[in-house]
Every structure is written in structure tokens, then in C-alpha cells.
Image 1: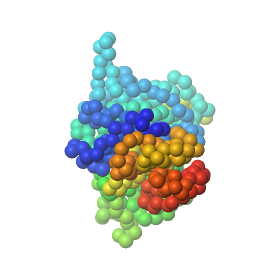
Image 2: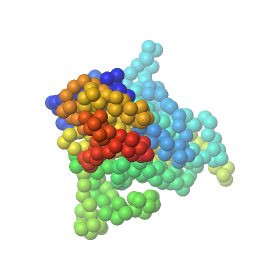
Image 3: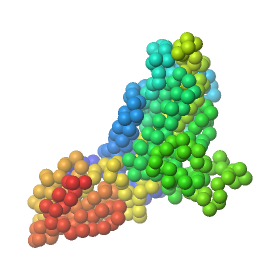
Image 4: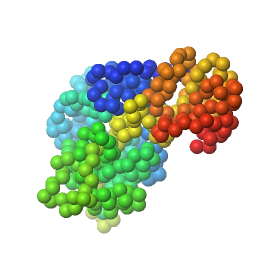
Length: 422
């Protein structure tokens, strides 16, 4: 993509209302534009990151055997009245009426819709286990939306819903999602910490939050340092048995982990999984015939990942004082190609044509060298190819690793081969 043909409205100065680094860089790097409190337009560069995150999530969910659907944003209040949550959910729910004066709502979550989706179809234990997921926009009318996409009112979420015939099978589904989440976050270059959590308004009696470590995180995590060792093995039962909690869930008096073995870190929540048994299936009459001929309520769980929230969380985890440092797996473009002066255009064009154009953002604009360097560091593409006067005189360009800052001189063909092979 040629920058001269692209829409990338970057900002030089830090916006006064943006308090945390991910919000500042999201606005400055031209990822998003605010149109109302907690509501954003996703600009081309930010949308590419969002789609890359979606692709990783979708790939791992599909590999796990989960099936993708797409449930509506707007839901009838009647389903929530069936479950008993309509009056209990509170002011975060955006309640609306249609032209027929029917009560509707913009979904903050989809447990009711998911239960309704299967209750008239799934009637036998032979139809289970089943797990459905979708990636859809939600709306929660936060009292104080802040921190950009980290806590907006409108947000993109992946949520999955498992349906099982009994507790044992439901635990298998829960563990599968726990393991799948580890794979998803590790593919994004993150280190996820799964902590025991309160179930909140979703309900149920088993829940884990997934956090990533970040100095600017809202949560304080307390976890046994064995957790990091077990994370590599992806042994779910062992991970669940390790002491790992957040904030008020930690009680120094009952914590049996030796102080020298207890890690205390700041973290950002990026996912949450729940098992809640028949909390929804019972009132909404979603049942199946078991193997012994009994009619039993379906056991359910739900599994959420904040897709748009991850954009902010990744920036919080990977940045420096110059800008964002995207992991390659989610970067909007893998390579930033910088043409420093008109006389090297032929060499820069040659490099651009030799590389995959959908992986390259080619700065072919007019402007100062300083502006070009600053902008490329700000948007944080993993690699930079800097085409200066040596490209003409000696066939040499500079290749910069954004994460390490290391710059190497290479022959043009060598640089092309080096980055094509990655």
C-alpha cells in the first residue's frame, strides 16, 4: 500500500483527554477516531489490526471444534425476561423500543440469544457437546468510559457458548476453551495469566479471567511463579490448581504460597470464561433427553475475549517512547518502506514491487526525513526498509527491527530476500 494513496491521519501532539499510553497512541497513530464518549470509528490502520486479531481468534476457535455463527446486536427484551436478567442487569444495558413499542435492547452479551438458538433444535444427548461462537459488537453504557478502546461503550467481542449434557462433559468444554485461550494469546505474542474470578452478572460458580502483564494495568495479579513454567505445557488442570488471583480475591492470610514464590504484577484483563450450569437453560427450558432416558437441563458455559480491547492491551504491553511496537502476528503491515529522497524512487519502487504489497506500507510521500522516521516509529510496524542515497551509489539500504532498534545495512536483493523469507 502506497502511503500517498492511503488514509492515515496521524497526530503529532498527545491528545489532552487521553490519559493512558494505548489511548494516546491509538489516536496519534491513526487507528481510531472518537465520535462520542466511548464510541469510535475504526480507521484503516486500526481496522487491519482488529481483523488480524479476529483471524487468530477465529483460526484457533475453529481448530478447537467450535462452530461460528453470527447473532444479532439488537435483542428482544422478552428473552431477557425469560432468563430473569432484564430488570437485574442495570443501567449499563441500552434499552430501546421499536416502532411497535416492543422493548428491545442493544446486547451487552448473548447468553439468552445463544440459549434460544439451540433450545428448539437440540433435544438429545446425542446432539451434544456443542459449542458455538461469534464475533460481534456489544454495547454497555459505562458510567465513565475511559482509556480509549480499553473501556469503551461499544466494543467488539468474541463470545462462545458451550452446551453439554452433564457436569463432567461441561468441564471438558471449559478446559478446552481455557487451553484454546492460551494458544490464542500466545500467538499474539502475549503471556496470559489465568486467574480465578468472580462470575459477576453472567452468573455461575466457576470462572477464570485472562490477564496480560502490563505496568499500566488496572488489576493487581498475585500468582505462583510456577504458573509461567506450566504455561508452556498448556496443562489446564495443573494451571487451574496453581494459586493465581486478582485484586480483592487475594487474601494474604489464606494464601499458602511462600512470599518469595509469589509474583505480584499489574495486569490487563483480555478474556473471561464461565461455567454456569443451568442458570439459563432452566428458566428458558433448554433441555435434552439423557442416555438413561431422563429429561435434563443443558449445562452451559460462556467464553469471552475482548477483541477491540486487545488492540489497546497489546499497545500497553508493546510500546516505547517513540510509539507502538506491534508483534508481527497482529501488525497492520509487516514492513514500512521509507523513500528518503526523490532520486532513490526507482530503487524504492523496485523493492516495493518485489515484496508482497499487502504486507508493505510504502512511504512515497513528500516531506521531511524526520517526519517520515517519526511517523513510521509511531505506527510501529515490525520492520523498516530505509532507502537513502546509498541505494543508488552502492545498492545498499538499511533494515531496522522496530522492537530492538537494531539497524543493519544490506544489499537491496539481500534485504528483499531477508524479509521475504520471514
